[in-house]
Length: 337
Image (cartoon, rainbow, N blue to C red):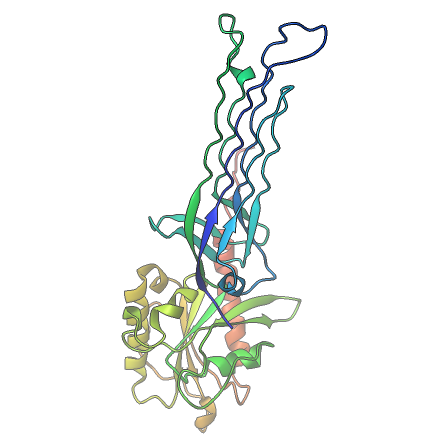
């Protein structure tokens, strides 16, 4: 089961209270205050875990609390800090405060750690309040409360290429042929009900990741069909492949509709590099690339996943474009010595 949005309640630990204590020891009259500080409450952390692909675990348990700090003790002993709670999430997870809508963090890499709820500070013991004019204080501080929040965890898959098209455009078939992914394939619309990722191997140990997104229909940006539920999964792709079946009645209208839905959902997403892929070429007598207007596209390709034709040219074009994008992401070296 693919779960990509959950809400959980988290509570960081409360800090321990400071101690009120006076030294009592034989042959040490008027030993003075020796109350130690309370320990810090545990934090709530999220950590990227590449072994996870969904947020399914958080449907079984939706409340997490870190340990509170121990109280201070005599002999100037500070209480032990509470243990942190770590929530493992798949890379690509966005964490929001559900009440305010504030984005607290985005976990993009395996092992990346963020604090989402801070533990309370431990209170000061009476030894802290000693001064030259106040040598026997009885003041002490209670520990601070830890942060309590209701969080929304939203998973946005991270891929190099996102396959975009209407239902039955051949996205799942293409993914199953160029990678070892095994998405569900059938001859009826909305076969794909959840995104699928596949690693595409090339020669010389080169690989890139392709995401098969459920079919987009007109009005998807308003939630029609599977709409908004899965459009967000192409936000983190580097480039898009707009897939149009060759047996479609109006290729230009198909392209314009898909591009319009993407632009209405996110102008930034529409600005990503894209190409046009005409699928199901096995229905034609010979490969044919329709001459339609595709402003901004870096190429038009004709393929048949079933007939295994045109795939190498398409993969090579994707790789060349990905190299350009990856090089642009590397910060320029400072020319100064």
